[in-house]
Length: 243
Image (cartoon, rainbow, N blue to C red; front, top):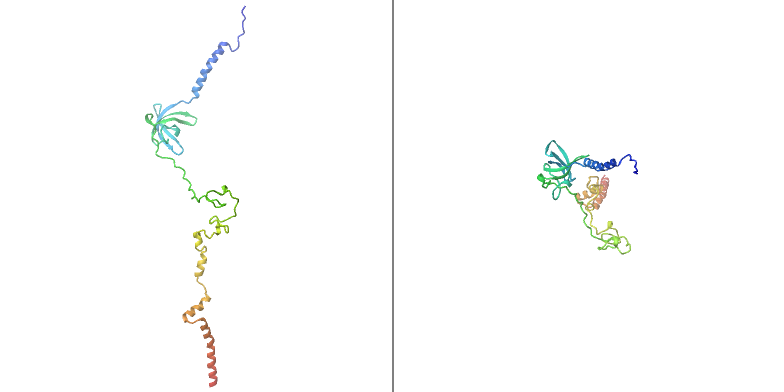
């Protein structure tokens, strides 16, 4: 006596066929999602050697001319060459590329015939190094030693002293041994030097000038001025006596 089992809704053969069809569908989906690699040729439109990228003008794709030329993005990592990788403007190249959401991107770029790219003679300008301060020598500001710094000094904190001559009687700002700055040698206030030479009344200088002209001393001038009235008085008395 045979026992029949109820057939399932899906069915054995149908289920087996579905399992076989799943890998085929997955392969088709992978082929659709996988970017198609194409080959083309053209020339470098421009390339930034500092940033390391640029664009290629594609004039031929899969053996067919492209009119007008299409721009294909190129990065320096895709260039086949030795040393510093770059492209020269107008350089003829052959490449493989793909289509992406951003546009056309190159995958491998070579020179004509698969040789290395020539590249540009330009090189990115490096940063200008900052001018280093002139070394003042390693000196400990605590003890004045030349073989270590203050943070490495083994002595306790020392009294403050002049960093120029190491004297404890004054600071470096008042150091007599420190050379003066050029500004300290000349007059700081221009009015000080011009005030002495400015014209003006000089009451104390008038008397010496008169003395130099007459050749007499101040005492002689004073005695002459005092004796003159006596001479006039004597002449008057003589006139009175005669009269």
